[in-house]
Amino acid sequence: MAFQWMRRVLLALAPAALLALAACDSSTIESQFRPTRLVAFGDALSDMGQTGPAPDGRRHMIDNSDRLWLKQVAGSYQVASVAAARWGGSVYATGNARINAHPDAVGNAGTPTIKEQIDAFLSAGGPTENDLITLQGGISDVIYQVQAHRSGAITREQLLANVRQAGLDFAAQARRLRGAGAKHIVLVGMYDLSVTPWGISTQLQPLVSEASRTFNETVLVDLVQQGDTMLFVDTALLFNLMVNNRAAYGFDNVTEAACGQVSAYQCTTANLPAGANPDKYLWADSFYPTAAAHARLAEFVYTRVSTRW
Image (tube, rainbow, N blue to C red; front, side, top):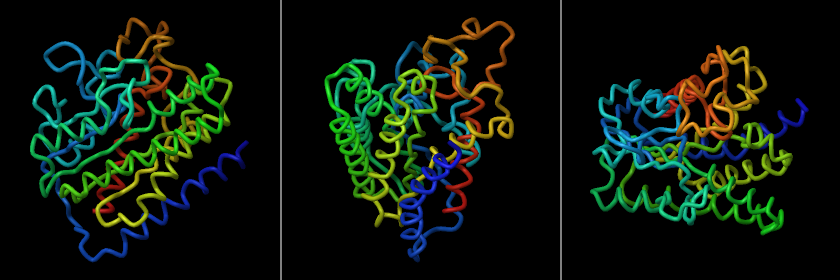
């Protein structure tokens, strides 16, 4: 099992190395980039409150925690304001959003896709010189395709083909941002959904892992020549390390959801097991991490971005 996991990590890192090499060839890379605005597109992992009641909507965090990885990265750069677009900010990410298709991961046809999030951003003026733009996605697309396969609606081959197309669509949105003038685009790869509580419950872990890996590799290969303005962050590596070496990262439970069957979007401390410390759990719900894991993700992203630019 350990050998297979390491082999998957090495395979995933191979195209990542190509993208990094393309970036190193550029003579225009800044060495001390200090962003003045953080702009984000994605799904629930990056949602700062695009849905839900005032004053700032709801996030997919236990007790609506404000400890989202995006906010922590912004704090590391001393970017003062990070808020959902509907509340006047520049975080367009919306829970359950797919990249370029409706309905979303839970069947809601009204959730804006990542493409539509970028449409709204470009209509509002688009990127500026000192924007740090994060583009994150794929989770909802893989969930949607796996569920379709489990219901018998599509074959395994169709599932993987649809995931590849989602990866190409994701890469196309990165190119749109570059074409609009964005100079610092962070592509946040998806973690391996087979290690989530949902992935474990599907009893299709090898297929879910292959689908997750297929998405990331498709993005990397398609954008291999774009390293001067783009950086791929391998979250699959981080989450696999946290699962396989949980104590080193401060976790006791890396297989169960702290909220049980309750969505992190609705979860409060009342939904936790008696006496449980949510910061000792890797997963808040079946799909998304706890605030403690968000902190690890923030460190991981900031280290790579600050080293790169």
